[in-house]
Amino acid sequence: MGKYTDVLLEDMNHKFQVILEATAPIPQMQKDIAELKDDMTEVKSDIRVIKLVLTDQSGTLTNHERRITTLEQKAA
Image (cartoon, rainbow, N blue to C red; front, top):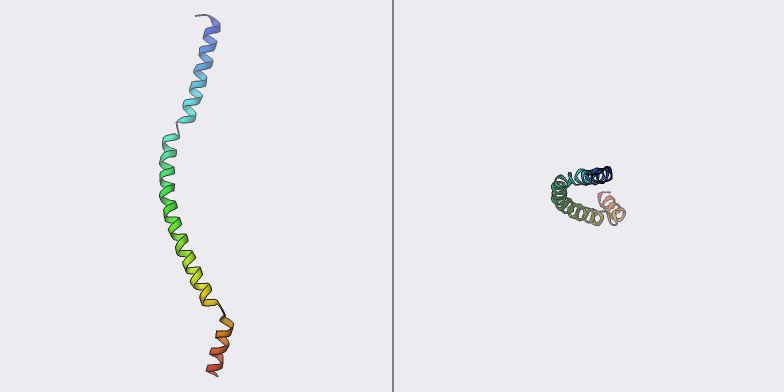
């Protein structure tokens, strides 16, 4: 083979090597994505609970000044 062919083959080999290096982490990334999916399911569930608690708390705090005044009047 000539020098030109050797240079072309070396260049192509380098490009393939770069592609292999870039794609090597993909299997681990797939595992990480699956784990994140599972974690997000739990996070969504937690968010629903937090929203319910906050809704309940805001209902409890609604008109709290009026309720406190009523309790103070009854205690007096």
